[in-house]
Length: 178
Figure (cartoon, rainbow, N blue to C red):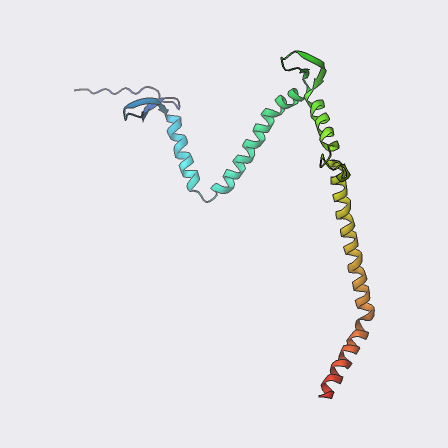
């Protein structure tokens, strides 16, 4: 008796199992299939996650993924910024001249910077004026604090010995009086 077993070529894309799920009634249905590649990938991931170096490896993979996404999306963003667009009315009819998204964004940024901080009280100034005032105030506070510290150090150095003698004399006099 001769038993002959014939095995077809097995590749990563060979289907080895069906993925079965249950619907809301509890009936089973085939959702898809698993290939050799799916099973190998699952085992690789399982082993990687157990490894002590997984957190750093995961971080590196995420960085590479982010860079690749940026590289893939960048041409589309550049095209969208440079492509001509037209202003339209509520019906979609062209009402203005040709412009680009980059020009529209720059115009909107200029408007926002010129916008008053408080529409009801103009003395508060614009958003840009408030930002400049805050930076100037912060710079002056830093400079003034440094100047006061330098003056305090100078006074301490000049009067330090004299103050020490006076404090010592006062304490000695108070102790002798008792």
